[in-house]
Length: 153
Image (cartoon, rainbow, N blue to C red; front, side, top):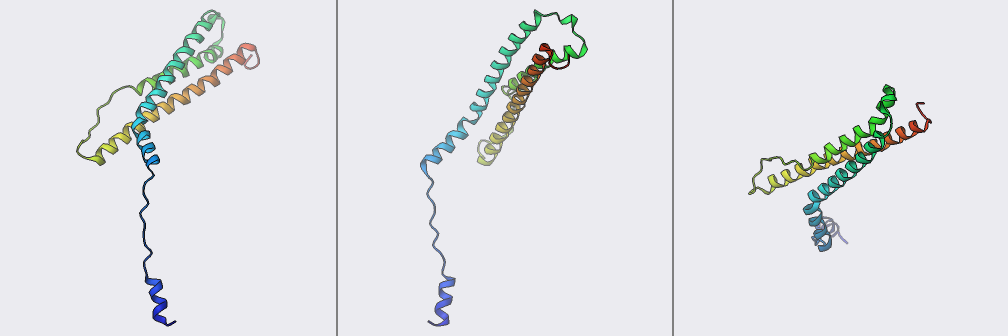
């Protein structure tokens, strides 16, 4: 073995074999992208339904109690779930508001950026709505514990 043979092996290029995309994952990715906005809007619809239902039930429950007899902080404790449900409802409904976006349908890059902006905005609104819904359950638990006299009695 001479020195020339050793350097030939080092300088030889490794063949690059392009990886074929797996059709299943490609179709799955296309489906995820295609249905992302409708999926986010479906979640927002569920939040609207849940918050509206909970607000109605809770409002009817507290209207049969004597709200005038409650002191300032007690009133705040019982109103907190309604506040968070209203907040959740507002952000969930904002998902459906139409906005205009400056885009060029002949530019795939511009279309992609616009699509990503729409999805990001709608997703953020649903996330805020979800956080408000979670906080409403915490507030509801505090109101329930206050009603039982366990806390803030």
